[in-house]
Length: 553
Ligand SMILES: CC(C)(COP(=O)(O)OP(=O)(O)OC[C@H]1O[C@@H](n2cnc3c(N)ncnc32)[C@H](O)[C@@H]1OP(=O)(O)O)[C@@H](O)C(=O)NCCC(=O)NCCSC(=O)CCC(=O)O
Image (cartoon, rainbow, N blue to C red; front, top):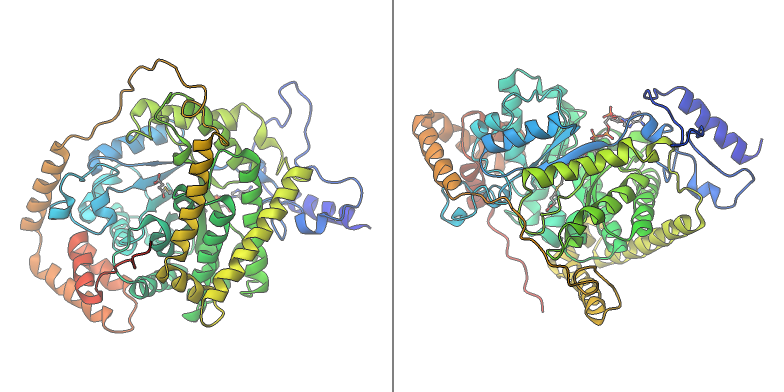
């Protein structure tokens, strides 16, 4: 039997052993479609590409693709206080959202309480304000945490926020071992692009190692890391840089797990990824396919992962916020639809579609609903979910996939060479310290901007096809009352909690910080005692110090 026939037989066996959702898998005009298409005759490219559901997973993780399960519709949302955001979550779930994704406000992202002087004017603005486990209870009130997978986008203070989420689950009566969800936690990309860290890199990495250890042992389905290229791309990187920097960061976390003596086949399934879907349709599809292939190969060949789940790159995608325009904002619906389709054709596991007004403010309820419906149109009407990796074998897409893979490999070599001991981690830390990542991204952003200004690259409504007379958009505005009320509630909670229990828990946490002990238990205790996020992070800042980025011109 030749390799094509043998491969197809392997795929068929996997497909037959899998569950397929009910549905009519035909074109709109009624033609039956196969679950997958492949070459009819031997093709030299095929070994690199493979079949869906098998190494190197270029064509997807599952033999069934979206016939097995469609991607998760996971709309990133949060604003004002926990009660307001809870209402938005219930709206998203009742409108067909498949999972939740929490956006926190800036003080929370920086580990500060709502009454911190630095929080002034920011409470509830770019996400929801969470000060303690009691806010987390309110955030998920009436939403069974055992049944809904919840992603939380936070990295600097990821661990105390995660512990508050565990406390909220305990208070709902959900066993924490049964939870499934994702925590962003990706501190490398904070230093590289988003700039929301709390401490120097080493204490952050220690906490992340503690979290990986805890989750691998206690909450096997939970993904404690969502390694993020989104913010790298939004900062102006190219697609190849996004791919390479993100996967390099992922390798850094694998090296961290291995350095802690953890079993790669146990902890690697907890590593998840998050990419941008930008407007160049085919380049984005190729990027997602290349990402799966590179990750599988490195995990197997460099880091010794044996199980398929440890070789899988699972990812969430968000359409490109940076591609949205304030001019002619209705056009953003079209951009988002094209980008979302690229994510789906690239085999994303989970997807957020941006709202048309996100360039101006957090989404209004109406804009949020259109964004959600955009995914549903793709899922329910277009028939694209009938066939796994429908663009596999396209000369263009396969060539771009190879090209992006080669570009990423060249960047990996550069990063490793920057380090002192041949590891990816050492190269990443050196690149952060030297401002190398930042200047690579800045160069790419500058180059693109120059092309826009020369008219070599075009954006409708910005440097071409301008001149539409526009109505002002109704946008969501967050009242200052939210901040006043959040501070009042926080003061009341501080006055009524058992202060001695808080003091003891915080002292134990610092004791643990000074030892080699795993920090998750003590931080969880502090959250159970209603210590606030600012108190927990403040005590750790006092212990570990702050981090100043080296200036670079
Ligand atoms: C793994 C992902 C990517 C997706 O998880 P999900 O649970 O949604 O989906 P999933 O794992 O693909 O699927 C759920 C289960 O179904 C199974 N499954 C899926 N497809 C299948 C198929 N065809 N056949 C058989 N089983 C299948 C999976 O293996 C899994 O089960 P098992 O578990 O048993 O295997 C996770 O990490 C995630 O949800 N990430 C979201 C991150 C996020 O929302 N970030 C927002 C950032 S927003 C941000 O940063 C701000 C940006 C800004 O500034 O605007």
